[in-house]
Image 1 (cartoon, rainbow, N blue to C red):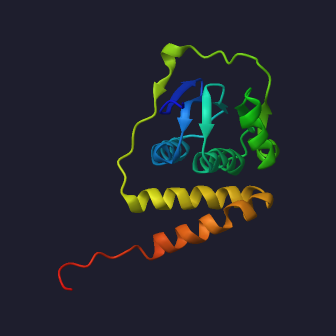
Image 2 (spheres, rainbow, N blue to C red; image 1 turned 90 degrees about the vertical axis):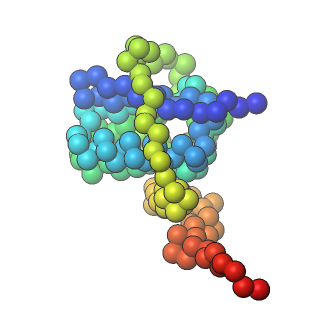
Length: 176
């Protein structure tokens, strides 16, 4: 059984660290997206490390948000972000999707040294269903843009979400 997930953040000397813990599913995505938007609007990190050692699973939406980290770092001519992924199952997914081309992927059992007292949960974002759909759509577009191999896997998801975002269902009141 998977644990409900959460995301921790720490910063030291403009180096940023995210630890993804438990089951990282799409309801966390708007919070992570808002956090990343705010962070990268304010500064360019000297380094960025994402620790997946305590991640039980991570869905495609949150993988797409990791791509956003790589894109933001590249746009700012900063060093490659580091993905620490000692779990073989998660690492296999990352490599199959092309993450090893845009991140420094570390797959050993090396322990990431960050004082646990410096880690804080990222703030929860209040979002609407429309906001959630837009976040999921953008994340999947980022996955497709990262590596052509991802297009076949996510093309239908993107088409469906584009329809949802551009033509939300209407609720009719009264009548027969």
